[in-house]
Image 1 (cartoon, rainbow, N blue to C red):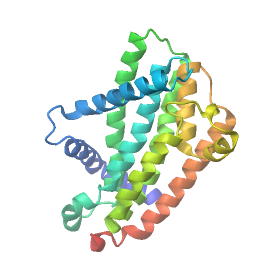
Image 2: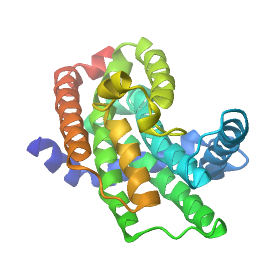
Image 3: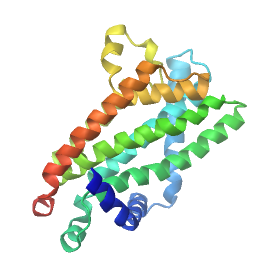
Image 4: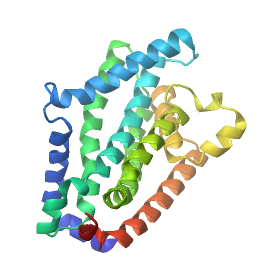
Length: 258
């Protein structure tokens, strides 16, 4: 891990160039460009708000902000891992000609997703102002929560980048995982609404804990429980460790596989 950090620092310019390149590629030939990173969560917010405030009424305080924050938190995860899928395979010609740490394309996906996250958080702040919502000082805990999520994204981005370069089925499988994860994560409902047997299983999901903690520190002025922190940190570090081992095993043969 130390050697990777040292290589990342030496080639940080390439890392950020890749991140900006990923952003440009994502919105290439789009009239609105990066504005889609703002429009997309707003459109999803509108649809889900109509559905769950009229057809399926949930008694959740400050529901619009609750819903938007959940969407933004999930989008950070979805964008980072989705961009990572093609981060190596899309640069096959470049990789075969120039040496740089093979972790850079996958890690740059997390940086790209972070840029998109910042634009979406601006929208969240505007919503809070319009809805006259004054968050508690505990909202500052969103910073370490998003940093933990960033680490989770990196832990998945590395193996996803090499696995998708080797097996194209990974992209489709991960798409299904993301769809299922969206509905199994308390984005538009509260975790306590789920049956106890389901909660006992989902409590080990890092995204369930991250989204729940984000809601609590932002909307209710509550610090995360020790159990939530331990579940989230423990599961994230397990994922990072396994992801790194997978990446390390496959990265040496990545040029030949593409």
